[in-house]
Amino acid sequence: MFILLYSQVVFSQLRIGDKALNFVAINQKGGELFSVNKGIQNSKMLLLFSENSQTLTSNLEHIKKHYKSLLKQNIQIVLITTDAMELTYFSYIHHPNVHKVIYDPNKEITSLYQINHSTIGYCIDESKQIKAVLQKKS
Image (tube, rainbow, N blue to C red; front, side, top):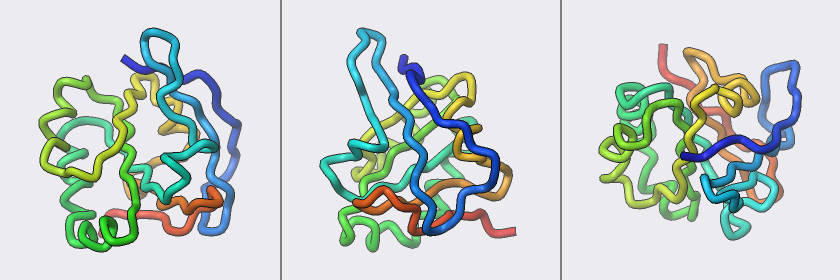
C-alpha cells in the first residue's frame, strides 16, 4: 500500500505549459516511491489515472494507439489508481512500459490533478511541464 505524503493546493484546471504539481508517494515502510519533482530517471512521464480496473483498462485502451510512440519517446507510464492494487495488477500487466503504480485510496492525487470524467492523464516532460492533457473521446 502506498500513501500520499505531500501535495500542493490547486484551484484551476491544469493546462499545457503549466508546471506539473508535485506529490510524494511513499511505501508502507516509509521509503519514497515516487516524486514528480524527481521524476523517473529524469525522463518524460505520463501520469495515467483510473478509479477502478474497468476505467484503467479503458484508459490503457485509449492510449494503446499511441503506445509505440510513447515507447519511442521513452515516456514512462505512472499509473495512479484508487482501486485495490491486486485488481489493478491484472489490468496493466500486458503494458511493459508501466514503471510505477501508485495507490491513491483517498483520491488525494486525483483531486490534486483535477481528474474528472473526461481527463484521464497528463504527459510531463523532463522540465516537469505539462506537454499534453489526455482526454477521453466524447
